Each structure stands twice: as structure tokens, then as C-alpha cells.
Length: 426
Image (cartoon, rainbow, N blue to C red; front, side, top):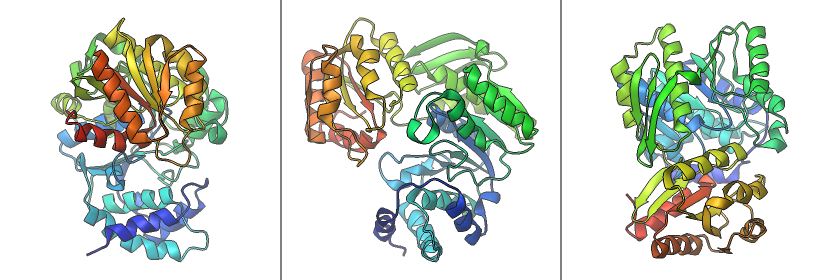
């Protein structure tokens, strides 16, 4: 029996991140290039990747395909990044493949990073399990992301382009779009789901050079939108009425992108019925994206962390709670534009609790709190993550107001653990 803890220990010892495709290319070659053994849908974008992948994977599963899914970061434990037919893989499956991969990693002069090892594991897993299709989410960017060793994807998707990861991807929309357009491959279809014209210009140019058919999602096909904290329904021209249990006002755009992708995949020969579309969307679940995790009090966890995501969260708070101000629990990474958060969210906040997620890149909670105090938003800082979560829950409960837990997905695991201990989790 392969040793799961040994596999985790190995991952902890290697570099977390380094740019470039040299290491992942060498590792995949040693494994027999498993990324070329499964049909792959490759998904990049600033926001919406996780929701898009979850919805599309569910639709493909209801269409009768065996579907692999790779996403990051893992919210609970490492196996959460790998799913087959929407089910998290077992520790045994993870450990077995890691045991096979580690000797190849050790034989390399330039050792692969943690994310490169996990990416290679995903490709190998989906090949061994004989998945018909794998939906692969980029970690960051596109051109130098370790997932970008895919040579001929069934479809490349760029959900949208906004400012994020500026230290790595650049400070302008055009620079960021250039990186994400790196997933476009010669003569393979590509979907752009955003509405930024500068980004579209870059993506269109890349697609033309590679003779790749570009489709742009038409959000004008959306009508009759109805949403609450339990989900969203809408009409989409050509599909009629559809519904998902995933909440957040921004999900209407993710749905539009998914349905447009379905049309492209049908043209590529996939058999996807309208019934499979409707069943897949209603069954799709994703954690940490405006997720209702408790009803009494209402508690929502949202992993938004960049300006575009925070704006969408603010719109959702306004839509669902109106004039009722909310309690906010927030923890973010130090590289985020955190000083924008109080400006964008301030009018919706009754009180803020700042915490430091369990990650070496996390911003300290005092600095984060000071950014809110500048705007006159009352709050408290908690060095202990568990204590901060408990204080925020208690405040929301005592004042009968919703609690929004916002920022880094790295604090999701601890947040859910505390809710479980308090018997609050749905």
C-alpha cells in the first residue's frame, strides 16, 4: 500500500512555485506524456475558472462521459484538487501515483515544483483511469503555467481578464491577456468569455496567428435572471430556462460561458443533450465561491480576492441583503490590492474581523485592519485564526446579521472546521 503521508511529506520539501515549462515538460516526457492520452478542455482566466470547470464537468458527466477535473488550490486536503465524475479521488489513488512519480522527479537535475508534480499527477491519473475528457484549470496565467504542456486541447477557454497577480503577469490588461492567451493552440477552438475589449484584441490577434477559431460569449443572450442565496435561474437563447444551485450574481456570466462552450463542443462531435445541460447545471456544486455554508445565522464563504472578484461580491451582497449591513471576516495574501477592499465593500459592512490565513504569503491581520479603519469601518484583528472566526460568527449571531467570510481560499478548511464544531454547517 502506497504511503499517503510520505507523499505529502515529499510535496512539503520541494519548491512551491517557479515559472517555466522546462521541468514539467521533462517530467511528463519521463511519464510517457500522459497529457496527450486524454481529450482535454483547458481553462484559464482571472475569475470564474472554478465555477466554469465545475458546471461543465457536471454537464459532461450527465452526457455519459467519464470526466476528470483538476483545479487549485485544494480547499481541504490535496486530494480535493483531483476529481473523477465530480468525486474527490482517494488518498490511496493519490499516494499510488505519487509513489510512481517521485523517482522520476528525483532523477531530474532541476527538480519540479509542487504544482508541477501535482499537474503531472493529474495527467497520469486521468490517463490511468481512462477518462474520456479532462477539464484542466490553469493555476496562474497561461503561457508558463505548468498545465500548458497540452499540445492539442479539445477546447481552450479564457473565462475573463482582469487585474491580478501583477508581480508575475504584468500591470495592464494587455500584458495579462498575453499570458493567458498562451493556452491557445494551433487550429484548435478557443472561447473568450469576458467583455474587456483590450483583452479581446490580444486574444483575437493570437487566435488569428494560430488559425484558431475564436468564439466570444454573447451575454446579450441572457434574460429573465432570478437569483438568491440558494442559486440562480435564467433564460439563455437556444437553451431555454436553466438553473444552478451555485449562488452569486456573477454566476449568470459563468453559465453563459458554459453554454457557449457546450455549443462549441457539440460542433467538435460531443453528444451533449439539453437535458444533460439542465441536469448538470442543477447538480453542480463548488465550495468557496459565494457558498452558503450556514443558515442560522446566514454565513457565506467567498474566495474573491482581486478587485474584479471583490466588485462581484459587493454586487451580490447588495442584491441579496439590501440595506442590511453584514459582518465581514477577511484574510488575504500580501500581494493583493487589499487597500481597495474597504473602499469597495465599506458601505455594506457593519463590522470587520481581520485574520491571517495559514499561508506564508498571507498579509498580517493588523495591516489589513488598518486599511478598514481608515474608512471608518469598526473592527478587530485576531492573530489566532480560530479565534477570529469564532468572534465573527458570535458577532453575526448576536446581532442577527449575515456573515461574509472573504478573501483567501487558504482559510476555507479552518473556517469549515469551526462551523462543524459549532454545529452550524449546512
